Image (cartoon, rainbow, N blue to C red; front, side, top):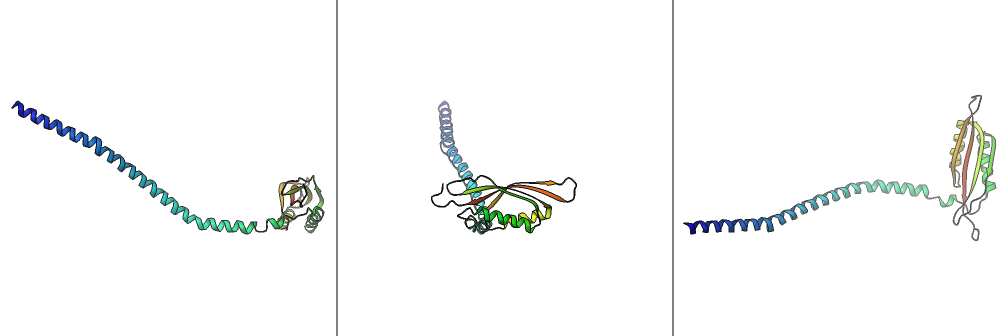
Length: 181
């Protein structure tokens, strides 16, 4: 009987070693691979979903791009090759006159030169009703020359008659001529 018990014990130990070896060397590695495969599948599904969502945004982005291209279409044309500052400042004064703005001061400052684009800072002052000043700015924006308004200050007059004093700092751009610094 002792032999039989040893034989059974040996069979049980061998079975445990086989099962342990199977679990340790086959089942656990396969389980890790399956887990990694599931995670990869989830990541790929998320990537596909994101790509699909981004793909739906593409027509919207194309429309925005076309709109920006239309806005910037005449950008280069709005930067003349000569400063013509006198003529342009007269046009600004003319706009102020059209809108009945009084106390006009249009004062160019020192020119700033760069390699591809020069600019002339300009200080502007005038007085008028707020609607007149806003209409002046709307028309100024529609001019065929690039001008950037950097600062606008509006002051109510002391007797509250509806008059507003405006001070603005603007920059007028032009392209330097060939050979100019």
